[in-house]
Image 1 (cartoon, chains in turn red, orange):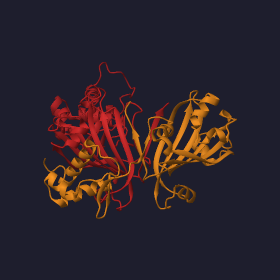
Image 2 (cartoon, each protein chain N blue to C red; image 1 turned 135 degrees about the vertical axis):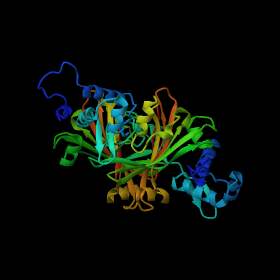
Image 3 (cartoon, rainbow over the protein chains, first blue to last red; image 1 turned 120 degrees about the vertical axis):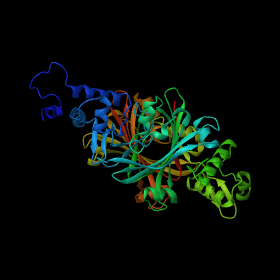
Length: 258
Length: 237
């Protein structure tokens, strides 16, 4: 029971321990792993039992550390599902259009506040031989392209369908990542190839039958249609995305210098 | 190629590739469905579905019994610069111009005070202009300029001239930065009439706050654009 008292924010102020308690040390280990991108935002942490075994420590110690990180907002619990790494800014709909590092590009904002964003993966996998995609990605015609098609939801309501294509050669093993919970950009960032500059084009079009179904719209209603090429800091194309976004759910904001 | 993409999506992308690679121009006619089916070695139904995808995206238009054509080009509206209309006009030459509809001095009402974070009652110039692209009306622009910063602004200054050029030359006010917002709205009666669209048609609402070098708000604008005629682009530096 005594150990649980440390489970708060660690500043109980009762007395100073000569050394940092174990759960604080363990907390640091987890935080370092999050910072290093080993655990990505949205990713599920191993269970407390597994963590205890991995580090050869008491399960209560793990629990205390996890509790502390939850109360600090680094982790969150999802009833019956486990503990997950918190997303940086979960109100912002990162429709693959956002440059977090600067003011380049357009940001899609969900119109209402406090919306919880979730994803559904429609299809994913490697394709090759498409002249169109290899041309957009500036890779060889037969180089593999990883395609990831997702519906983005805000509070369970569909907001956007995104068709994303990346050069598989840069991201081998990406088929193992849980993109339902992990943001694509966080993952790309962890590989050092996050898009930071963009060529973007968007227009308003009438939604097609296929996307109308995904977005729960009537045929003939309009959507934002986006096309964009994303380049990493070295100027290499790392992403090509086409997306359809509901106009009643999202708007776009951007800043211009000069 | 696996089942990640359906055949018609893949074919539609290959057609898109060909259109770009072969440099097809707007309004140009495409090869027939039969020719395309032979070229790609797929069924005509697949070609038809692929072409339909491109029609839906606004890349092609289909005319019954005549075939498929490259859709007329949309007016490209660059979002790289605050003064993007000026650049657009330069690129489009004489097919783009503006018509001054209203020029008056007003006091900020509550709604506009909220938008601009200026005090209610602040004196402003209200300038309403109709913008043409390819000789068609494409945008109704409402611009609110802080009177205090450009007291002698006149109708002549904004009549078929760049407002920002005038502000720079006459008042030494140059733009430092601006923040923008794009959303979709439905036309009110006046806008529908000016843009020659039915009120049930969706339009683009483009709002912006423009700040000058000393950090003072210079302008708030609300532009309503034809959603079917415009395409926004942002290009890397």
